[in-house]
Length: 214
Length: 344
Ligand code: B12
Image (tube, rainbow over all chains, first blue to last red):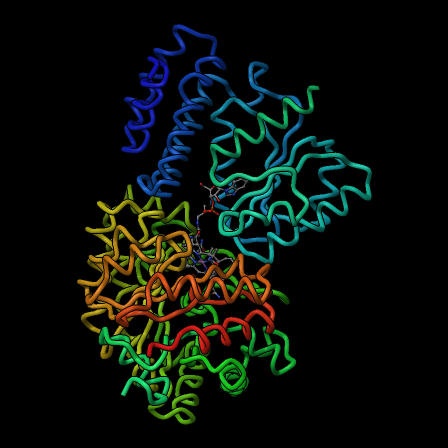
């Protein structure tokens, strides 16, 4: 294990016990050695991955995942204020809750992406036609869609159809409980990728950013 | 007696006493599908007890499963506290904006009176109507949402997690109100004729709340509520994984526990053997894509993992089969249990 691995694990441990002060101290130290985005990539991103892994394995609970993603988002906001040019502002990324009243998944994913240095546009809760319209209007290149109910997950098909009809090639990343219970569902709804937790959302975005750069 | 055809009630009681009945009992926990049978919209169907009673009877006549399921929808409990309901054509109704806008609103929260709350009375009418038709031959499964999980609908999930960590006094007051409601609501269901009440507590799952916190909060709540119920309770984690918590849940007095598709069914059965009946764990979401052959294979797999020795009920992993599941798949599940679930 490298020193960086070890420190991001310690950082994850601090987050999971809600030790905000301890986590802040570690991030300040990392910042002293690196540029803000680099420090975030070295410490915060792998810590969120570790937390996602522990959630899958059953050794961290969703309540801890939520609280730690909030702490990270706040700490990183101090290093990289919203819209700071040092954040990853391009390509344009959007996130939405599709016709569903359950916002926690979106909140966690949004916090994890912002804590990883991305800036994104949060569309809140909307229907498939509303979402497709916003994506086209704002020229969003990557959209993350969160759903908790199966019926909402199935509506992503409609978003895809509307985007294709409008000639949009926006990449769609999906997630939420229905996709964890049916690992084939993301393909069926026409998504480009899915993720089982917030860290996987960050990874999927990074992959899409790379693909779009090619 | 194991070769003679048992009634559903005999079959279920035998498995609950950790003995093998004539065949594996199975619960198709169907709520919305009754609307399809009656040609009604989901909203119309749930608007009158007589529709749901008729729907439940038709579903059981079609699939021959071993229970009646009078649940209308989980959000009815949020509705009882004054919350709004959002209806859909193709899925279960959900709770809309939370009633508790800020934590301090908990101070003014009142316990709803069961008999004066239309959405609760309707479910009681369903239970008594089913009891009239079934007598003691078919178990009727009542439902309550646990006082510990209900706040997700009362105040929103994020706000509730923050309350749990940061405001112990308001949390305690919320639990006191919800416990009083839960006990009254469960006992009203027993009075109406429910055989058991299923205590839905997905936040008991270590996937949701860490066990250290759950042990001193939700587990104590469960212990209190179940000790005040005038009948036997099952505990269901709503497809949250249960393996790490299930033995402790058995000790609070539940007779059966729901198992997630994400759990290892055989491992849960091994942990529960002789202590608590396991109910599970067909994956309702994935079920949408099952062919009849796959459905049969999944039923066989679950039976192989957990049926030996009794103490097992085959059912879905969430406590409700999604609207999107076809009759063909449900029939295939039913036929597979009849064919592969015989004990002798
Ligand atoms: C706790 C719970 C409850 C609680 C609280 C629910 C709530 N939030 O309001 C109670 C008991 C009240 C409940 C009730 C119901 N529930 Co419920 N419940 C659950 C449970 C166990 C967890 C849900 C949850 O909130 N998780 C927290 C969120 C944040 O988790 P998540 O969506 O998985 O998000 C994570 C990842 O998926 C990912 N992620 C999320 N979004 C995104 C987006 C992208 C782009 C990416 C990459 C990743 C990603 O990151 C997140 C953090 O790691 C799930 C089953 C399960 N094991 O997940 C069922 C589940 C959500 N319930 C379900 C249902 C149907 C209901 C009811 C409608 C039942 C009914 N007929 O009444 C009611 C509705 C309640 C309401 N609000 O009106 C179904 C929904 C699917 C379906 N069948 O349609 C589920 C999935 C169960 C199942 N296996 O079928 N439920």
